[in-house]
Length: 481
Image (cartoon, rainbow, N blue to C red):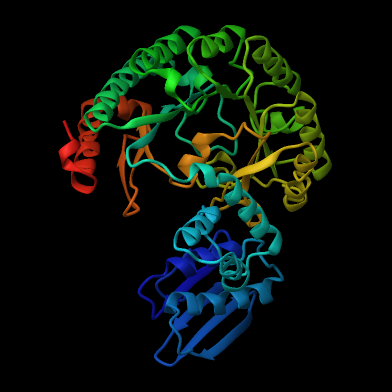
């Protein structure tokens, strides 16, 4: 499928709208004969949407309305309605292609828009289903106490780009411990030095740390001693008693043992993640996981013994070989364990994942039915507290975090709704600087891969000077120093 756009300054909206229906659609500057095509043409007085599939052509042609809507939106509506008609599909999130639908509600409320107008925006302008709008609104209501941050609040993200093995669906910047073991200790040493620089920079700009998140990859793929080194450095640098939350991902039971769980607790973690993704041994093997469902249960029980009283567990709807009944069995298994958080992701087919690179022919089952069955969390006392979407997600669905009341993952809310600055350490890290009043966001990137990060470490530290430049330029230069 090719996408051809004419007469618009930006093709972004049409490009991503087309991919809701044809995920592999590619933009072309001109139509190639005998290829399936989505065409959007915006002229002086008329606009045209056309779809050619398997030799059959369908089109809608309309006079351009005289209203205040942007041309990109006007033609997008035409293309969307035609694609719905031709494919028989109506995406649950309608025309929305962005990752943060809940943020739309927060922003509208901040502008003083009425609840009725917000609902109209979702249901009528963007054609979102009532069910998905209700979910987004419910989450926005729950998040409201944490949406007002101080100008200098920030969270700290620490990335560990190593795993015991690579899952077939994964597109993260991560390396297997077995192949890259020689890089791990130099990486941890550099990471500790970068944390020192970040702390000095934060102090210079009078920033207030709210949450810490050590993610990956799999942080517990580090040895117990390396975890002590890293978390000991964090403990030396920060007063952890003032934190709202300190999360460490202990996601893989094949590299998380009692000693490491005790280290996490000893050095201040208040929340951890143990992520089975599924409790089906067959599906685990199919996605490249080298552990069993019983290993997950063992790891969870050991975490409780080690004193962890705020645990998140992830499931993925739509994994190869899974079924709605299999997904329900996994969910019921987690509910028996009763973790404080359960996050339900929808499988996303990303270009950097082995599923896509190797062009695997997999059976993904009825993913919409799997996501629908996650509503069993409502009956179990869990509340949805954050949500985000990704391009390439099966059935155009979403990822939703559920928690028992009072156990909401604050870092997840802060980063997803862009509440305050996130300072990021490690390979692939993306520091996100936020100016509260102007809603200005600026990014500073670290090198993507571990070896690049180590070899270019001086440049990584040099780039952190951009934090001070940002606060001096966009907040208040008098407070610097």
